[in-house]
Image (cartoon, rainbow over all chains, first blue to last red):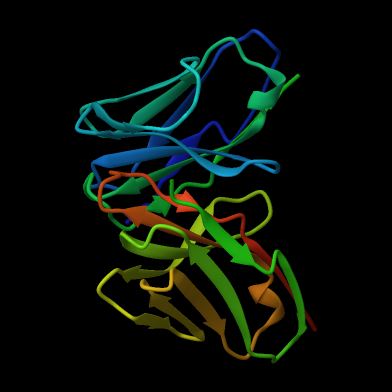
Length: 113
Length: 113
């Protein structure tokens, strides 16, 4: 069974631009969660989607948004990029939305110049 | 607010040694606790998941224990090998927080040949 895939793996953007990251969960998994990992803040929860609905949200500004499609694939969008958005963005998939084992993808490394 | 702490932040041991990594959490109303491994610049690999009703889980040379009442978990690694060198993260999920794991900052383990 294929694992969680994330595309692209690396991105370089400049301040003010916007970016879209993609995550495909493990087949059969319907919950996708997004996390931001930085050296200073560690791993922080962004949001979780289940059945195309956002079920949970972390403390991030509205510039961070996401969506989920009917096939459970999810996208995350960051608008008006700032230098501080440089991070490793990880997505995790679970079978269901209730607390459950999470399986992580390889991440997307975003660098904002 | 759930806080997760991991001690020590870094650990260096000679090959063959047994070692223990520690994780503590402030809110004992957890649903589960998961231990992960992260290699530099990579995603997270799930090692062990302990449900709140369990006391321990074992996989190969790894054994994780959970004491909910004291808010602690330990990851025991037997007969360490250089390939075990990585950052180890623990994460907890609460009953009420769908899809969200709260992570510690990790323990970076170096096993010297």
